Length: 78
Image (tube, rainbow, N blue to C red; front, side, top):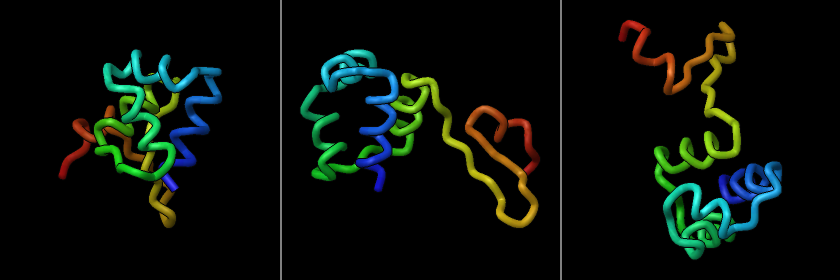
């Protein structure tokens, strides 16, 4: 599933794999591996790819609608 999301994010910005790889400071083969489900990115890399494509990762509570992102988690009490 993450492979399809990464490909969608990249194409939403009209980036070639090389462009996205360069912007994320990783090898083009790494992006290709993510998109073909050959390898799995870390959560940090998913966030970096999303941010590079002007998206953010959001966790939403189904019951309450509360949203947590990596940007606002530090402001919440745990």
